[in-house]
Length: 85
Image 1 (cartoon, rainbow, N blue to C red):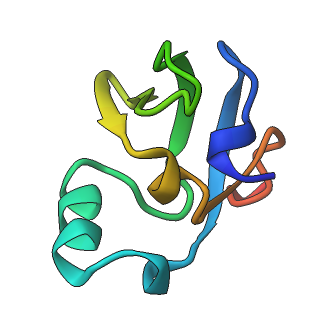
Image 2: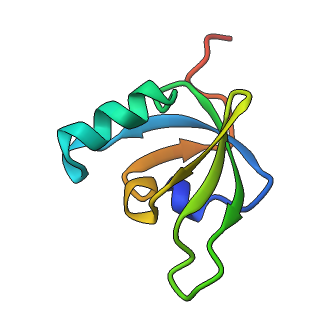
């Protein structure tokens, strides 16, 4: 599932990021904010207009706003498959 499809208030873990869907600067900004494989995320709120953009996402203890186009490049899983058992 993609991050833009994650139900609100559900926690998930980032499995993969398609960095090619965004510019290098945008990718670096997201990495600096903690968007990386294995990170836990939670969708908190979506924009109120038709496009529901941006999406408020909790990463660790921080809440960030991410464009829906960028969230669609991030694959997540509700199961913690990235962490060793």
